[in-house]
Length: 47
Image 1: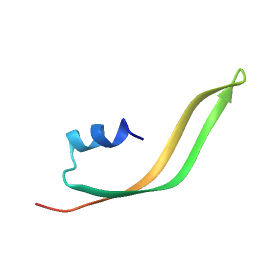
Image 2: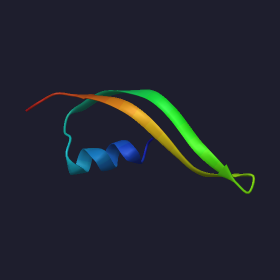
Image 3: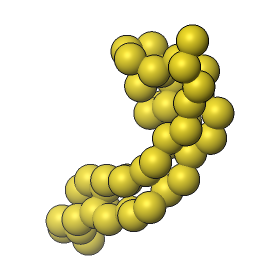
């Protein structure tokens, strides 16, 4: 999460104000977490 918000902010969004995690899911391979995904809502203000 900490890496995602700044990356998203640098690409297209400015003035981020809040976020809400809607869903978290992932996959386990060889008894380890192979990957995970987060669905989130993001609030921002327009310039």
